[in-house]
Image (cartoon, rainbow, N blue to C red):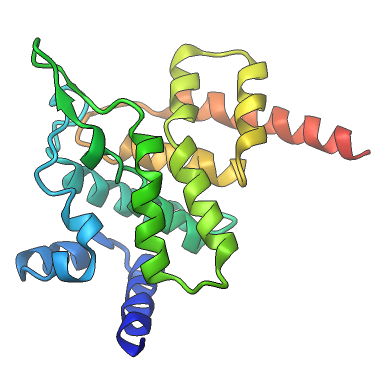
Length: 214
C-alpha cells in the first residue's frame, strides 16, 4: 500500500508541477522502468499512427506531447489534476483498436470508448477508492475528447455542441483537452479558428445553461 501511495504522490507531483511532464516518463522509458510503474503508458510505445496526422510517431510520443501542451493549460482548468490525468489517459484505447487497412491507412476507430476499461484499470491502481469524482471526470473526458475538434472541423451548428456539452462533466476543461490534443503533434497548424469556434460554442452553452437555471 505504501508503494502505491508513493507512486500516486510522485505521479501527481509530476502532473501538477512539471513544466514538461514528458521528461519524467521518458526517463522511466530510458531506464526500462516505465512498464513496471505504468504498464498502460508503456503499452503506447510502438503503437503506430497515421504519418499524415501524427508525424511525431507512435502513440507514446503523441501522448508525451499532449501532456506537455496540457501542462501549459492546466492553470486554466477547473480540475487541474483531473485534466492532466485525462491528457495522460486519452489515447489508451489506441492500443486495442489500431489496425492497418489494405490500402495502408492506419485507423483507430472508437478508441476513445475502447480505452475506458484501460483507464479504469489504471485509475483503480493509482487513485484512492474515495476519489470517485476524479475517476468519473477522467473517464468522461477520455470518452468525449475527440468530439470538440470533430465538431469544429465540421463547423457544426450550436445544437450539436450543446448536445456534447450536456454529456460533459466539465465542458470548459473538455475544450482545453481538445486544444492540447490538437497541438500535441508535429503538424504545423493554426488552431485559432477551431479555438474561436469552441469558445463561442462554450459561451452559448453557458448562456443556455444559465437561462435554464433562472
